[in-house]
Image (cartoon, rainbow, N blue to C red; front, side, top):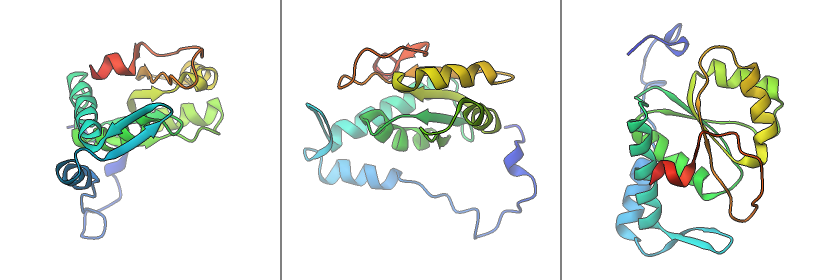
Length: 169
């Protein structure tokens, strides 16, 4: 693994080097409450078992895309199932989840994508305008952009190279 900007000037110790992960939560919940509802979005409902499966499929798709431990996956999403899945699926790969604030302008987003060295960006087409502008401003390698389409709010412009449901299929 290569050295990144995050490894300079911060000696590892017990206070800053404990792996924190939500993974034990979802694994246990899927095992203990597999048929209970985990996510409701419009008419769509998912159980904990289904959510866990979708998170694992996201993780598997990211690994197949070349995402490794320590890489950054950025998301700019509203409160949709893909956001929940990213909070579990990205850590399953060992990657870092960088949730982008939906109120930021293109310049700030371009800085965050570049500074965070995002390899993948999952976004809602609702943010296509500002994401498109941020990607134009981004210097260097551009992340793979995945559109997480929201059936509750169809008709938005797309900026991604692939749709989220196809990516995790």
